[in-house]
Length: 427
Ligand code: NIG
Ligand code: FE
Image (cartoon, rainbow, N blue to C red):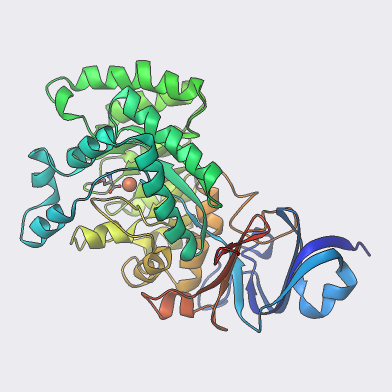
């Protein structure tokens, strides 16, 4: 029998949710209410360096794992452990506040109206252009601390509040620096086609030329982003415009992602599938035909219920339909200053259950395994198995269901990132 050497052992885990794909798919609730969780009762985990070397039952630990001298052993006292959460859709880097816009929306102004009048995203673009990289870095670090406190160990960060070459590059450089400076892994995505900036409002084509001919080549040349995203919707970029940008990105090695079907059924799902996008996100207006096509594709479906909520809308995406069709459904915050300002991913899981009608175990899959897959990181993050990153969230409860059921509070007890305690910060 192989014995693994470990410098970190987490033991006495009451419920260990490995989310290991090897333990099967999401299954169906009636026949297997824990399907997809890879649940091990009375479990233990072992890591060496930044990787897991073993996951199993506590009683098998001694025969499979040998600790190095000075190894850390942590008794979790029957608590829950699961993979560090993955937030696969955020707009992490921006400056300024839109608290005044929030109050105006409460008073009856619409998001679209505020945007058309030069507020909304444009207000954030102005503040972000004026901010120094140091200011953006400081803001980003505070946000990452909050994400980490809620158990997030990997997140995607989109640009899109620059909308000129220098500021888009500044945002992506800050995103990379954030990933270096903070324990949370940051995966940068280029979203130059977020909206048409004010100075190009009478020259859309010219802006798209700038995105495709100047920004994208610079982003690719400097290796500043892994993915290329477009806000493709009614009133945003059209299908042909989105295709143009995504194809230009693909030609430079950036895999597509897409904001789609949020405000209307446009065909963004079909475009995402055709171009081999990793995910199509929002989906409030996706229909049954879209769900069937997505399920048969390699493109993940990302739900952002917090955006529907924060915009005061009622048209939540039909997550039940998507999951029943067999889609890989991820759940994310969409963290941004206009349509969802929160780092609380577990709260989004509660909404994904009550508003998108996922079952709790499906929502947890959506913030772990399927979220990692939506970032092309399925072999690295989102599940606990030998060879994966030792990214572990320990909850201060003995029942994993409390992560979603007992909502709006923070259940985090400990977070390990790449085999090191990251939260609470050691020392
Ligand atoms: O994902 N869809 C467009 N972008 C953001 C909102 C950005 C903002 O209002 O600042 C979103 O919802
Ligand atoms: Fe978004």
